[in-house]
Length: 105
Image (tube, rainbow, N blue to C red):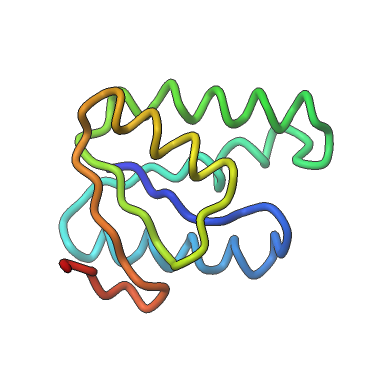
């Protein structure tokens, strides 16, 4: 499954949150993928071309994931692109709070 959560802006705090979301998914028996934890290790998040490449590469992996899990109440531009692609690919989308509680309403 694909982790969708904020990254840009407060990168340090958002990285810690994304790691927590990964641990949550792992503890529930899933094999999560969080591109925003992978690609910034090799690409410069502050370089617009590198950032765009990282977003594109993440979207390539979305096709291979069974679901998209969205964490938090704020949707960034990058997250919006992931949501649009998930819809285009007919991927189920699940919503969670920052505390990893699923929103089912």
